[in-house]
Amino acid sequence: MTSKLRELISWELQDNWAFPILEIVIAITILQVMSINSFFRGLNDIAGPFFASMVFVIAISVAIVFGRSFGEGIEKRKFVVLLSYPVSRTKVFVAKYLANLLAIFLIFGSVLFAEGLSMYMFDDVLTLALWGFMFVYLLVVVFFASSLITIISMAVKRFGLSVLIFLIYVLGLEYWLNPIQGNVGTNNPLAYLSLSLGPYGQVDYSYRWFYNRLNIGWFGPSVVTETLFLTALCYFLIGGLVLFLASLFLMKRIDLD
Amino acid sequence: MKLLRIGVILLVVGVSLLVATQLRAKSVMGPLGGGGILGPFLFEPRETIIVLRDSSQQNVTVAVVPAQAWLGTEDPSSGFGGTPQSVSEATPVFNVSGMMNLDRVTFNMPSRGMYYIFVLTSAGKPVDSVNLVVEQDGVAEDLLTISAIILGFGVAIIIVDRVRSLRRSRH
Image (tube, rainbow over all chains, first blue to last red):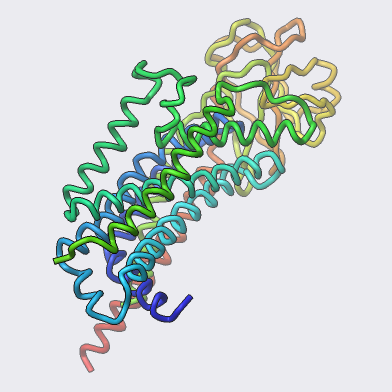
């Protein structure tokens, strides 16, 4: 990593994560995740409540952090100040994106680790695998949400408006795709575009696959088929990548004045 | 300034964990089909209360056996059923029979570790469906201690930082 990129990342962490942003993100993550308790360590007992709780945490944290970094950065002309130094737009974008993504994931990952410890998940290979899948798919969903808010912020160039659009999309989709509403069933691929059911479906499929590979018995079939798993994975991973590249392209072309 | 920030972050972590611990200390309910896993314990197990909320059969036996002593091959999380013989062979740490709906029993876990819980009918078969409330203060108490320690560290760091800055401003 070049020294300029390191400097930009350090500046971004100091500026964007100043009091009380870091404290708010830590507090809501601990409150939502550490309050999950179960005496049974099966897939439905831990992964389901975890991703259901994380929707609110991801939506609020990512919206505040990335919306502030990109939307407010353009609105308050912080980008213009940064670009007055001999750094390229790509470097500024990558530094901002990387700093915020890593910081958010460090907080989420640490709290998930603490929850794993308190739920005794590192004791046997099955629960360890479950924790590992939860960790990996959490990273994927955070990457998707970060890329989504980034492109919205770059497109509308306003902090408040970008956060509003992002929250309406994410929480609206969550409400509409919730099987309880009855609009879509759990066997409908659309349901796996939700921030809670999507990663949970991926964990469900991967965990069952892992369990059945161990030859310790047969973990019964689930509603999550390969098609539904791939739908969720493609939406979050490839969708996130496309949105990230589109944001990078927009950064190069955007009029910052 | 950095010290103050660290103190504030520790304070926030401590307070959040304290609140989260209060939230997670609630009763845990789980519909079981004959058996399940009982645990986990963070540090040391404490008093455990089991309430039989609703069972498809009456007069049931509730037994808790250490996971290591269980000789069965089936996975407890997928709703297996132990027999009275297999349960007694595994030397249960707790065994009570003749439980009716809304009965409650209290017992102490002897040591830290994983346990399997079985609910059997008087005929020795797994009950069709059962809703248990397992209340265990151990983990909550441990987390409460941890959050209080973190909170204490945060407050101490903030006080040290304020005292240092006061001293500096006097000089």
